Image (tube, rainbow, N blue to C red; front, top):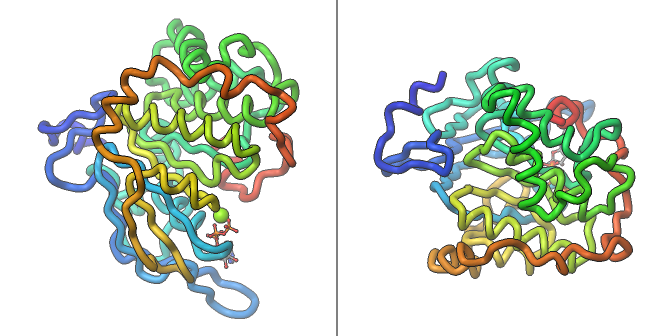
Length: 295
Ligand SMILES: Nc1ncnc2c1ncn2[C@@H]1O[C@H](COP(=O)(O)OP(=O)(O)OP(=O)(O)O)[C@@H](O)[C@H]1O
Ligand SMILES: [Mg+2]
């Protein structure tokens, strides 16, 4: 299943797992998703072709119901195409069975949701350690230290032993980002990660993403916010299950070097509990059982 990890030599990811030549890191070929509904078959994706290269920061925008979540659920393996191919590195994700997908996702894709999806009975640090326990990439003895280091990277070290209910929305999302990074996956996929945050906290989450892209991650982010989408390198607009247009965002490759100089996201960006407005809390029911499965 991971044969491609060894084959590609000329482009190494941050964790060495993606070794890439001229091929795309992520490729969707003629992806259709058809839901069977009481009213008949419904085409949520109508033959989407998409390529994403290593180190790209891509935003996906489009009206509600245009297929954004369906699209990104294809490449996390949370959902399967009715037809078409989903290739990530050398893995044909659409061919994996449930068990293989869970292991593959755990190691290769960090998923971040709008409603954070932290487990409410686990502390922040336990939430971050959970994917490590599941995937066994890091030795048992390393996990707590690594989880703390990830929490510190998102300015949450001081809250490590709190339950999610004692954290603000922005804080919970930062823990969720640390959790997504648990196994050092090369790809992060975020479905409206700032949808539940006030604009200042949303901006801080974007800064964090920008820093992660500068460190070598590839990020695909769904957002309703056009201003935030412009901070990506590429903006894909979906309409009725099809890619309507692709435009260039404001992010330039040279920005990456600048961002590398930035030691961390300023604490002030995250300081106010009150302004970390969250209309809904992490204890909200999940939107899909597949998301539950992931969390
Ligand atoms: N399980 C399902 N069964 C039937 N139809 C579905 C199912 N999941 C999604 N759809 C339909 O597919 C279309 C695309 O849904 P999707 O969730 O991808 O939209 P979206 O662009 O993410 O919207 P939003 O911005 O509201 O999150 C919608 O019309 C939705 O009603
Ligand atoms: Mg959606």
